[in-house]
Image 1 (cartoon, rainbow, N blue to C red):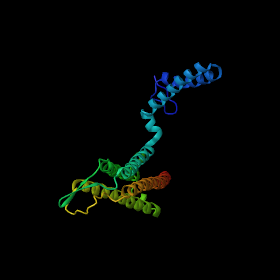
Image 2 (cartoon, one colour; image 1 turned 90 degrees about the horizontal axis):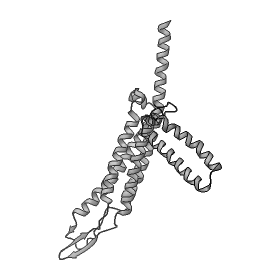
Image 3 (cartoon, helix red, strand yellow; image 1 turned 90 degrees about the vertical axis):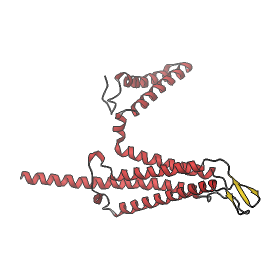
Image 4 (cartoon, rainbow, N blue to C red; image 1 turned 30 degrees about the vertical axis):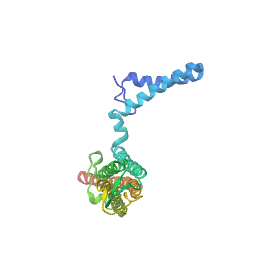
Length: 252
């Protein structure tokens, strides 16, 4: 049988009771137990608390506590940070140039194996998902209440930040894709007729610049979500007041 308290409706009574009993036991152990017994008992108590926390976060009650807004925001932050990390690591792992092996009438470029192309591709995908989640965070019908787009974009601030978010995202994705494709082309076309070829790679700083732009885009999408939530609240408030006035007028 479960208990209903602060969203713990799906936890068994024994688990929740052990969580609170462990707190009381921890106080007793800290006050009266010997040092060896204290350390062992506190370890068991902490482990039980962690298990309860993990159990709770894997249940529907956790989703109710976090809410739809927090879930979408966490998705934007997660994939935005992934794009940033992948881009920074791709920049640090990218070699400055290949090793030219000169022969008769040409040069063969030998490049060391590095994950820059893979990381750049993953950064592009992560940033694309961030953009989708950012758009969802604006137009999603929270609590099953859709709001028209003209109500969301009535504010000039919302329109400006939405345009900036789209522009920064497009620039970041374009730079990341350009660096990734350029790096891949250098690896595929590694035989050159020019004996002076120095076996270049993608321009230094492109991956890193795109990574920081991806981080900026993530922040702008979060700002757009907050502005959209404010616009939603204002629109729904006006609708509720209008329905209330209609009800009073019909009653009279």
